[in-house]
Image 1 (cartoon, rainbow, N blue to C red):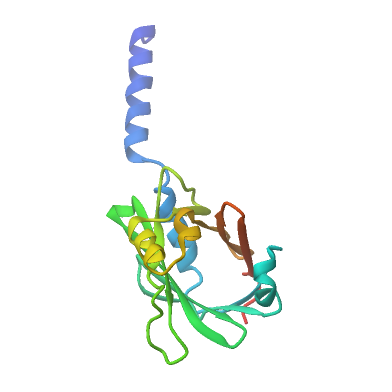
Image 2: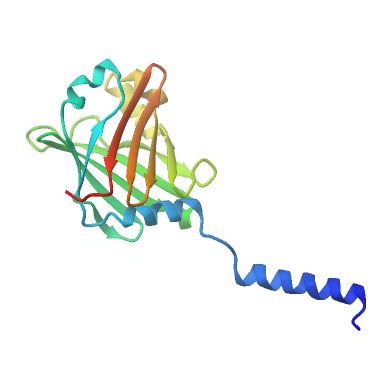
Length: 190
């Protein structure tokens, strides 16, 4: 018979080896990016579902997300069309070995040149995100861009993206007195 102390020691050693061999799941943002990458090559439809008065024109339009492209395993590009207006692109880039996810909004003018308000966004971290929801507080670059373009109300923006794989993606913009929500059906490709 093995003495009790030896049994406990063997159990603890076995547990430690198992923990080392199976370090657990990957970081939340790495999993989140993997969910986004599952959309590569696909196009989806959506709609604005929030009721802010300022979004009345957008609620009348079909939103088209895609075709989603993935230039590499760390970058997902999501073109966004609002009706016939194809001037928006969202880009999400996984950085710092999965510790951060950079989210940028790119806008162009009708002539195809960059809008003065472009390249804004924020960075999600594993501390404020999960494998299905990433939260992007406005960053300093964006604050400077907003200030330069007279958009002081946007200085406290927080964006989030929630993804339910093969079901739904929800994009939100929130700040005081502002709640924009767009929902995309991931169960059916366009």
